[in-house]
Image (cartoon, rainbow, N blue to C red; front, side, top):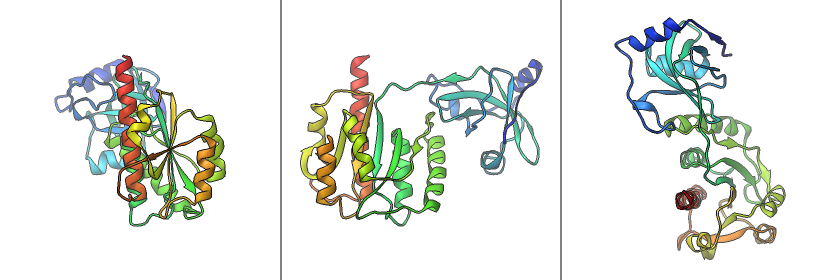
Length: 281
C-alpha cells in the first residue's frame, strides 16, 4: 500500500541542493528527463510537496536493482498519463518516501487508439511475452487474447505474467499510458466490436497490401487490429469477421508467425496514424 501526505517546503529545497542529484533536462514530458529512473505508482501526489510511499516490486527495483538512495531524483508515473519528478526523501525496510518536486503533469494522447486482438494463447517459449512487450513499446492501447478454434484457451498464470511484462515495457520505453490487457475474448464477442468500428483490419493471406488499404482509409479515434492463431482462422471465422465489417489486409509474400504479424501490422498502423496526425498539425 502507498501513503500520501505532505511535508514542509524546506525539505524539497534540501533535496534540490544535494550535490549527488542525478538530473538533466528534456523538452518532452513523455521522456525521462536526463535519464531519471521512472517508477510506477498508482497513488499519485496531488501537488508539489506531497509525498508518495513506494513499496513492493517498485521499491525493490529502486533500492536493490538500481541501488538508489536518499536525495536521488526519480520520476513517477501512474499509467494514466500522469508524470511527476520527485526526490527520494527517506528509505526504510518496507518502502521509500518520494517528495514531488513539482505539480504533477497530465499528458494526453491524440493519436489513433489501436486495439489489438491476437490469438496468441498457444504460443510457447516466451513468444507471447515478446508480443506483449512489443505491442506496449509500439503504443497499442490494448491487447485482447483472442480465443479461436485453433487457439481455444490461455492460462491464468500467463495472464498474470503478461501484466508484469506490460509494466516493465512501459517503463523501458517511457510510455505514460499503460497498455490494457483485456480478458480473453471469443470470436463471437469480437464481432460487435468490429461492426461498431470504422477502422478494423484482419491480417489475411493474398489480401490487399496493408499500405494500400490504409491509403484509402480516414483517420479515426479508434482502430482494431485482428491477428489469427498458428494455423490461421478457420474459413467460418474469417467470413464472420469480414461480414462484421473488417478489412482483410496482406503483410507481404511470406507466412508470418503470430507475433511477427502482430508487430508488422501494428507498426504499420501506428506509423500511418502518426503521419495522419502530423499532416493535421
